[in-house]
Image (tube, rainbow, N blue to C red):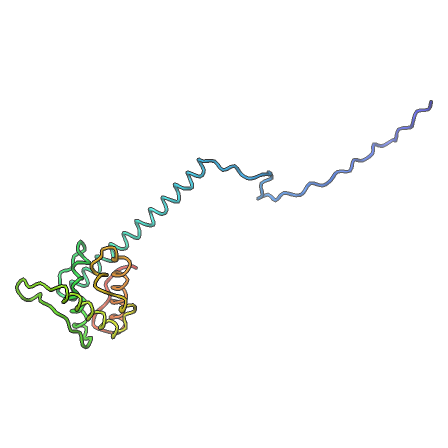
Length: 187
């Protein structure tokens, strides 16, 4: 029997080209493994960032309260301390005095600070806050109509309502060319 003749050259194999992988792309298939450790590290980073942000906000609030306490004390001759900030403002006298000194018309409020040991009643305090609200609306303080006595009494409202109101209050007084400059602070 005759042997089949062998080709002189080997037959070329057909090779499918592999898809090119970009240098920045990883050449593996399947999802990346997520371990409990990597999740914990990411959670710790997130918690640390949130804590730092919270500390900055608290520091900013303390700076604002300090600058407003100094500004209000200076312009109203009512001693306003940082430790009892809301309480010192809750009778409305200090802010009404600032409005009156600034020349805002029709600011009428009850003020016993010059008399001997006479205290304002709750009704008088509420009346002063209402007078403050009306006068602020006349001058153009935004959101003054949303302010009430409870906003001054509740400590939880300090950041939500009182400090933002004081920012608008002082800003409005300075932009209306009323005699007072805003307190020195960074928002």
